[in-house]
Amino acid sequence: MKSEEFQIMIRPTTGWFDLHLKEVFHYKDLILLLVKRNFISQYKQTVLGPAWAIIQPLFTTVVFTFIFGNVAGLARCGEVPPFLFYMSGNIAWGYFAGSLTGTANTFIGNSSIMGKVYFPRLVMPISTVLTQFISFFIQFFLFFIIYIIYLFIPEYHMEISPAILLFPVLILQMAMLGLGFGVIVSALTTKYRDLAMLVTFGMQLWMYLTPVAYSLSLFNGSILQKIILINPMTSVIETFRYVLLGTEAGSLNWLYFGFSWLSTIVVLLIGIILFSKVEKTFMDTI
Image 1 (cartoon, rainbow, N blue to C red):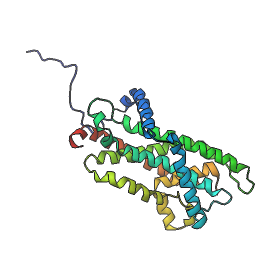
Image 2: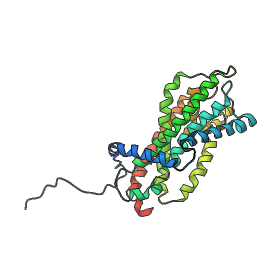
Image 3: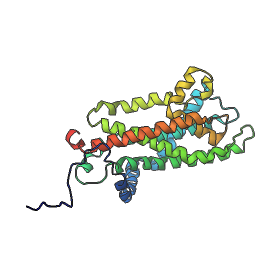
Image 4: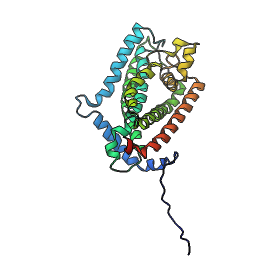
């Protein structure tokens, strides 16, 4: 009996490295539609609408400047305005935190859609990160306006470093790091719902382990400074301030900057692999 030659073999794709990342690119139109949907729904039925993207970081910066800057004296920024010092840290941290908390709810928040139609599930968290970038852009535009105003006040002095070329690199890193940690939490919350409750609390603790409310120079030469520098977001915040405001507001340590990028890539790869593994069976557990 002549053996048949099969042209197509059907088998379950349950491997850890069946990521299908190229397929995500083919759904770029869907990503843009989801970004539009997310942004509209975020401010739907609110009186001020997208203005909240400005009000929230603005009020937070005012509180930080008064309490941590003027009262506690934690902003050692020399001739750099404390308001700009805190605002730069707040908008950078806000983008990262918003990306992480937004993607952490991917499976639970979108289970009704994912259970009806097929598309690469990674499209959802990517669209969330891009939505957060819109808010970041609005906030940075406000930061730029205030920056220009301070340029005309003689007592303050800011300098833009040639390292400003790293600015888009930092934005990309915050997006990747937020996406990586977010999809890890999202994958784990399909079985452990407690993690969803801990995300907000964990982000608050993480912020205080990152030099957002204080200057890293407060701990110069101490073991605590090295511990804080292990945090990948520390290098991002410090470099972000350095490229925008100068050496008095931030710093650029290439060793820790490289370590931060290595951590970001590792976290993102682990997150995508875990996310890809869970997405195949999450409807059975959610």
